[in-house]
Structure formats: C-alpha cells, structure tokens
Image 1 (cartoon, rainbow, N blue to C red):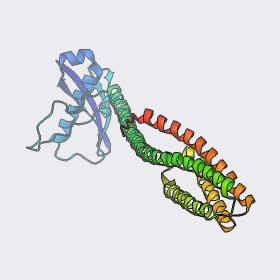
Image 2: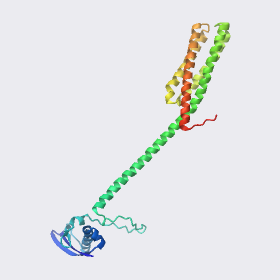
Image 3: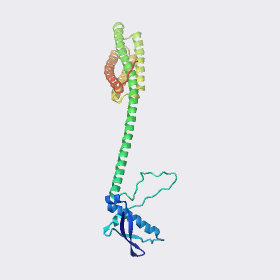
Image 4: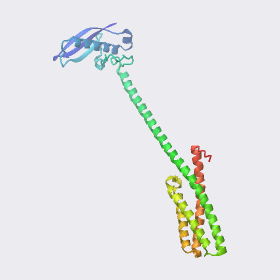
Length: 285
C-alpha cells in the first residue's frame, strides 16, 4: 500500500519541500495509521539524508504530512533507529526490541514494567538476605542454648549433691556436738574436710559462669555468693571451734544456701525441659 508524504525541511538557512510516496504494510496501517505512516516517513527522510552528499549541520525537520492533510510531525520526531549488531559470534535474537515500532504508550509501559521488575527483584533479594540473617541468628541461639543446656545439667547435678552434703554435714556436726561438745578433734577435722568440698564447688561454679543462660544469671550469682558465705563461716568456726555463736552462723549460712539451691534447681529443671522441647533434645544418658 502506498501513501503520499510531504516533508518540509530546513537546511542552509532556508526551508524546502520534499514529496514522494512510501510503502506501508496494509494491516499495520489499518490498525495504527498515523504511527505506521510516521515510521515510513522517518525511513524516507533518512534516505534523503543518506543520498545527499553532505547535509548541513542545521538540517532540521519542520513539518511532515501524509496524504495531503494528516500532520504526523511529532510522531516522526519520536521514532528512533534500530542499532544493528553485525558481530559474527552473536546470533540475532527474535527478542531484540524494535524501537521503530515501539509506540510511546508501549514505551511508557516498558519502563514501568522494568521499574516494577527491579522493585520485585530487590524485594526478593532483601527477603533472602533477611531469611539468611534470621537463620544464622537462630543457629547461633541454638548453639548457645545447647552449650548452656549441657552446663546446666552438670551444675544441677553438682548442686543436688551439694545440698545433700550440707544436710549430712549439719546432721553429723549436731551429733558430735551433742555427744562430745564443741571442743574436740573430730569436729575440727570434719569442718576442714567439709570446707574443702564447698571450695571445690565454688571454684567449679565460677568457671562455668560464662555458659549460664541469661534468665538464670542473677540467681546463679546468688548461689555462688551463698556458697562463698558458707566457706567464710567455715573459716571463722575453724579459728574458734568452741564458739557456739560461730557454729550457729555456719548452720544459718548452710540452711540459707540449701534453701536457694533447691529453688535454683527447680528453675533449672524447668529451663532444661523448655530447651529439650524447643530443640527436640533427647538425652539418653
């Protein structure tokens, strides 16, 4: 199908008119007559420029009309050429964007699609990064809780043993005092041996304080302080084994220590159950 094109150009400081006929695809022209005509006019103008030996620097497009009355000047100015890639190692793709047939509305949609595509891509990348961060943090918490779990099981066993030792020590001391009085060699020997056991437990608890769960830290240091107070009471009684007041001080310190050990062990038992449930720990030993 042929259409008539009239082009008014400006060059060398003067306007001049060029006219001729152009071929267009009939189906495209029926769908988008003005845009199809604008593409054909653009190609025709390029031929005029290419056939001229040298067109001046002030070469300008002034007006374009097809079939005598249809002004398509603005549309022709929006047409852009295709950049051809003739490299032998690149295969021509059927998906290359054809800028000469891309209408302004489609161009706007293309950029809008690119924007939302980039936005979705950024969202996915950010979500993956956040997911990795959450997973790594969960793994660190799991490792810390497993370490705390093992430590608390050991400490719990030691404190149970310590509580039983306190009860037994108090029972033996009372029996010996009732039988032989405060001043006897057997009582002094028991005090020194018993004190050594408390000092060993105190040293153990001091070494393991870095692996104590945050929720039990304050109560843990209360236990450590109470055991230390018992050892101090031992020292005072060993210096004066015949002083009933110092004996009562040791008894009171032991009773208090035994009381908070039982409460602490109750709390640690609940903590161990929570960790076992959360991380599905099965301890068969």
